[in-house]
Image (cartoon, rainbow, N blue to C red; front, side, top):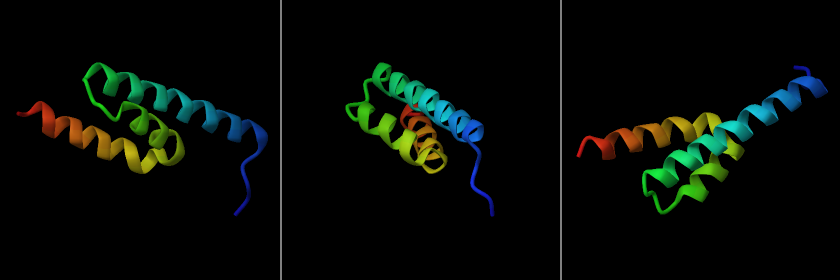
Length: 63
């Protein structure tokens, strides 16, 4: 398994930074008191956190 090159690393960094910003903004606008935590968690472990966040938001919006 090869390590990603600098271009791939930078692209992934930018992608997850944008994803974290979007999740933070959405959580903040939805009134979630843990918006910062969701944003940071998305940046650090995005592939695991984003589905959890979306599922929790879906459950809360159904009420």
